[in-house]
Length: 67
Image (tube, rainbow, N blue to C red; front, side, top):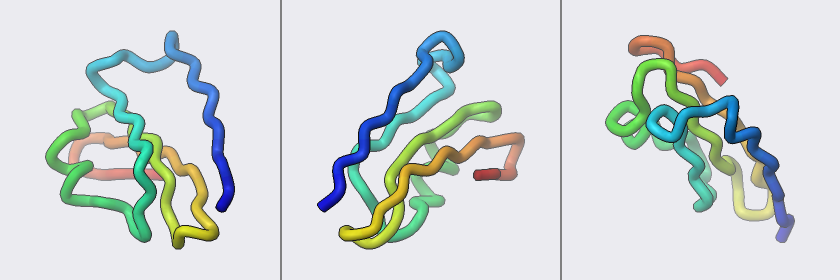
């Protein structure tokens, strides 16, 4: 099992537009992001199988998402 440590520049993100998800998922949880992430918001989360997860950043711009 790999341990991932992220260093976040808190000055860059406002607390009301960023989500840091610590629980890994095999795929991106689109329903969660659509419901919880505001326009202009950023989510950081581990994605992938349990033995090969990678930390990704997803930004919401209107109704679109980019990573």
